[in-house]
Length: 107
Image 1 (cartoon, rainbow, N blue to C red):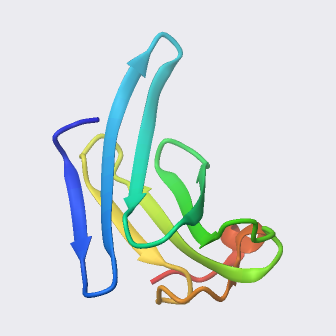
Image 2 (image 1 turned 90 degrees about the vertical axis):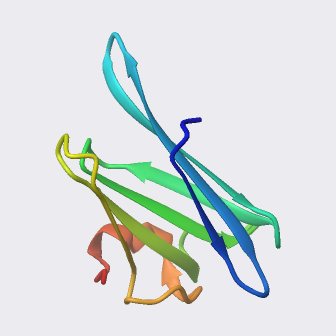
Protein backbone atom coordinates (compact mmCIF):
# COMPACT_ATOMS: atom_id res chain seq x y z
CA UNK A 1 0.00 0.00 0.00
CA UNK A 2 1.06 3.55 -0.53
CA UNK A 3 1.98 6.10 2.07
CA UNK A 4 -1.40 7.76 1.46
CA UNK A 5 -3.59 6.50 4.28
CA UNK A 6 -6.63 7.97 5.96
CA UNK A 7 -7.64 7.10 9.51
CA UNK A 8 -11.03 7.90 11.00
CA UNK A 9 -11.35 7.71 14.77
CA UNK A 10 -14.33 7.94 17.09
CA UNK A 11 -15.24 6.51 20.44
CA UNK A 12 -16.67 3.32 18.95
CA UNK A 13 -14.58 2.64 15.85
CA UNK A 14 -11.15 2.95 14.31
CA UNK A 15 -11.17 2.63 10.53
CA UNK A 16 -8.08 2.78 8.32
CA UNK A 17 -8.44 3.37 4.59
CA UNK A 18 -5.41 2.85 2.33
CA UNK A 19 -5.45 3.47 -1.40
CA UNK A 20 -2.92 3.24 -4.15
CA UNK A 21 -2.66 2.92 -7.89
CA UNK A 22 -0.93 0.01 -9.62
CA UNK A 23 0.14 0.28 -13.24
CA UNK A 24 0.04 -2.97 -15.22
CA UNK A 25 0.39 -3.82 -18.89
CA UNK A 26 -3.40 -3.70 -19.15
CA UNK A 27 -3.62 -0.23 -17.60
CA UNK A 28 -4.02 1.32 -14.18
CA UNK A 29 -5.79 -0.42 -11.32
CA UNK A 30 -6.94 1.33 -8.15
CA UNK A 31 -6.66 -0.77 -5.01
CA UNK A 32 -8.49 0.06 -1.81
CA UNK A 33 -8.00 -1.62 1.55
CA UNK A 34 -10.23 -0.98 4.53
CA UNK A 35 -9.46 -2.18 8.03
CA UNK A 36 -12.14 -1.78 10.67
CA UNK A 37 -10.74 -2.70 14.05
CA UNK A 38 -14.03 -2.27 15.94
CA UNK A 39 -16.30 -4.83 14.29
CA UNK A 40 -16.39 -7.51 11.63
CA UNK A 41 -18.14 -6.12 8.57
CA UNK A 42 -18.44 -7.40 5.03
CA UNK A 43 -17.19 -5.05 2.32
CA UNK A 44 -18.09 -4.85 -1.36
CA UNK A 45 -16.12 -2.72 -3.81
CA UNK A 46 -17.35 -2.02 -7.32
CA UNK A 47 -15.08 -0.10 -9.69
CA UNK A 48 -17.37 1.16 -12.44
CA UNK A 49 -14.70 3.11 -14.33
CA UNK A 50 -11.38 4.86 -13.80
CA UNK A 51 -13.30 7.75 -12.23
CA UNK A 52 -16.16 6.06 -10.33
CA UNK A 53 -16.35 3.36 -7.65
CA UNK A 54 -18.63 2.26 -4.79
CA UNK A 55 -17.76 0.81 -1.39
CA UNK A 56 -20.44 -0.89 0.71
CA UNK A 57 -20.31 -2.03 4.34
CA UNK A 58 -22.74 -4.42 6.05
CA UNK A 59 -22.82 -7.15 8.66
CA UNK A 60 -21.26 -10.39 7.43
CA UNK A 61 -23.74 -12.58 5.46
CA UNK A 62 -26.05 -9.65 4.64
CA UNK A 63 -27.76 -10.16 1.28
CA UNK A 64 -26.92 -7.53 -1.35
CA UNK A 65 -30.69 -7.10 -1.81
CA UNK A 66 -31.26 -6.22 1.88
CA UNK A 67 -31.72 -2.60 2.98
CA UNK A 68 -28.86 -3.02 5.47
CA UNK A 69 -25.87 -1.47 3.71
CA UNK A 70 -24.07 1.84 4.09
CA UNK A 71 -22.61 2.83 0.76
CA UNK A 72 -19.94 5.33 -0.26
CA UNK A 73 -19.36 6.70 -3.75
CA UNK A 74 -15.79 7.54 -4.81
CA UNK A 75 -15.25 9.94 -7.71
CA UNK A 76 -11.60 10.00 -8.80
CA UNK A 77 -10.39 13.20 -10.48
CA UNK A 78 -9.18 12.37 -13.97
CA UNK A 79 -5.44 12.35 -13.35
CA UNK A 80 -5.60 15.10 -10.72
CA UNK A 81 -5.23 12.81 -7.71
CA UNK A 82 -8.40 14.24 -6.15
CA UNK A 83 -10.98 11.87 -4.69
CA UNK A 84 -14.49 12.95 -3.69
CA UNK A 85 -16.21 10.63 -1.21
CA UNK A 86 -19.95 10.88 -0.58
CA UNK A 87 -22.54 8.73 1.23
CA UNK A 88 -25.77 7.25 -0.11
CA UNK A 89 -28.66 9.35 1.24
CA UNK A 90 -26.03 11.75 2.61
CA UNK A 91 -25.43 9.63 5.72
CA UNK A 92 -23.58 6.56 7.01
CA UNK A 93 -26.71 4.68 8.08
CA UNK A 94 -27.01 0.95 7.31
CA UNK A 95 -30.29 1.41 5.38
CA UNK A 96 -29.43 1.08 1.68
CA UNK A 97 -29.55 -1.78 -0.83
CA UNK A 98 -26.16 -2.64 -2.37
CA UNK A 99 -27.83 -3.84 -5.58
CA UNK A 100 -29.32 -0.32 -6.03
CA UNK A 101 -26.03 1.56 -5.49
CA UNK A 102 -25.91 3.20 -8.93
CA UNK A 103 -29.45 4.60 -8.62
CA UNK A 104 -29.05 6.07 -5.11
CA UNK A 105 -28.57 9.76 -4.34
CA UNK A 106 -25.15 10.68 -2.88
CA UNK A 107 -24.05 13.74 -0.91
